[in-house]
Length: 403
Image (cartoon, rainbow, N blue to C red; front, side, top):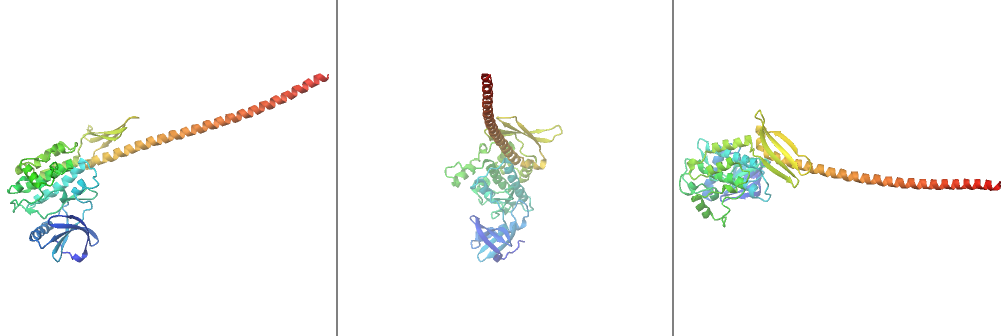
């Protein structure tokens, strides 16, 4: 059972988000940051959804499902107190103000964690269908490395599997709006759309003139249209594209089970996305990254730094199995660092040249000054010698004249 919380101990602050049935606030509970979901219990459908969500989350304990800390009530408002995840939703990351870049490896790790959470829900004694998998309901933590599934107010077990067209249209499986029975394969379809979105960083069906036209999207999906695979990023592995196609298949029975998807993505996380690529560092420097195996079968990554001036630099890294999932971030970081090192060495060489030039100029100036001083001294000495010799000659002449 979920712990009953004294609402007087919960302090609400910022609003994190709002949906059709509830508002989520940031808060403090027992000196811990929390997320607090507030429900208007006067609305019967909202009350029913809240009760279902609380009951379901109280039964789930998984690293990729948001953890519930307790529930509270204050008059006609009910509250669900949950762990607070620092980095916001996946939707905020993809389309927020910062627009940070991410690698295919990072996208695969996010997708893997989502698949792992869904596979757990689907493998329960009474399998649970989330019914609203989308980036807004996937939250990030631990410097964007950890992903968890949240928002279970539409979730239901498959014993009650008649479609009532719940969920978000962009991610809704065709059977969900055709008044057919839905199963865990409806979540698989939604996951496939999210996987496409991770690889394209675009809203599904955003090419429609009126992006909010849900009927146009429903018609397109009903007619067999899916988000185009040619819109995904150029370094998206072929295996990911094939998995997307399978997940969004028209026939639910031909979609893979979530456990198979989890295993597939888990292998990618273990072995890495080993595709050769070229990283341009600046107009004079680029890195060529290639993957090889030595005679013992050890996988190696070779990075050749090519510069317009100077010899190329080669670096070789053994790929350790557990670290392969992070190899792309390492490459980006190391290539940038190498470029900075090249820049520093170039700047240092320029400074050394400038310093030596100034030193040579000063040496030349000193030598010129010394030569001028020596010339002046020798001239004075010569004049003095001439004067002495002249006096001596005059004396000799004088003596001769006296005789």
